[in-house]
Image (tube, rainbow, N blue to C red):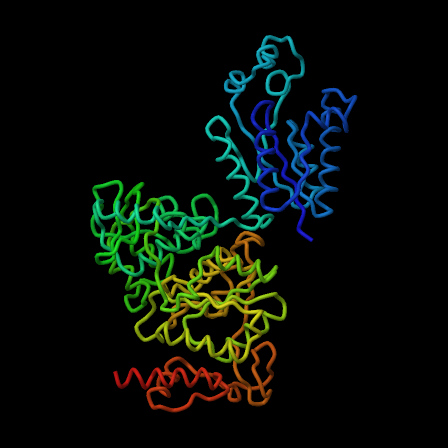
Length: 548
């Protein structure tokens, strides 16, 4: 059963509570959630008929609305209330009695309310012709800790509704909506033609990955390169300026600030995007390195890329004109396509697994443990730019195909590529990877204790601890934190430090360096480390590389 919740709109008469509440109800219906709207005027006509406008009667009215809303939410429904509810004490009382209570303060200045008031009630109240009129002759006590504040004197309906929906999504009451803005057909050709007439900015494969993921919705709620406020907030707080969790700066870096407001991004002679620049600012490389990577050591691959990039960061909306390819187009699925497959297979839950290596027995063990509690697995290898000594994506893809064909139930696993490039940012990238997989439709995500790590830059379990910084529901995806796993000769199978009592001497593990050494020598990889079919693909690829 879906989790019930209450959205409590409060604000002065005419501020726009009912308008936003009605729009929210329509949007919830579009998303498949039914709701009940308890409008203040209708409640007065039925549930609270006979009550006056003394403080006692107003409080009784609010308690009645709160009681009905609580019953709706307790049964898994959504209750939307739109009543002035002027007194803070009784609102807070209802909040304390109501789980999953979301208060929305609809603010509007009195002079604007007077201008909007076609019935002239505010003018009459100001003239003393109406007694006990909230906001004029009777107090309205603004919320101190509302989850959302909408200022309808400055925002249109769409902007206010977007605020409410974003908060409901971040609280985990609604699944996040991911909007794809990929062009096709004549529209794509027209934009490519326009790109050739615009000022050009040369970029590389990393930018190709970012532009495509922004347009495909993989980096939602981002839909463009970050402005200065988002950039600063991500580095300092691990959140966008609006509060949404995000841990990796997504900016276009350049050595010189473009003079045009609209530029085409080219990789060689190929247009890969059009960028509408909203601002440029000097990036603090040292602060970013420490804030994201935890080090400014040039030996760190992510820090090295950062320092080699331009000193200017450019923000703005971007549209993709090209798609990165893994060489396996049947697996290059967008977030929308992955979610569609999930729906077709009737998976209510799906766990994502990030990898930049062939899947060995330890990874297989983690995935199958997760499959015991979820409906499906998204095996989502990263195929963007990685370190030069990582195994090429084409080889890894062949390994995945062999493994899935022989050792996994076909109807429980989906193999799709992740076009992102690897930052090696450890804990910060673990959160980033979780957000990306949420946008691909995952409800769960596997995180190892050294997720996205490299060298000895990150403390053991740092990739686990970072998730303690985010409240339940904040990320919109459940994190499965797994221990280091290995083959134990005494246990006779895969195990972890949580399940195996035997000494380390009986644990069989292989480092990436050891694997590469065995492959260079033409030796077989032990079956405790990987499946023989996968070992054969890796050995053949190593021989091909040696003779190339």
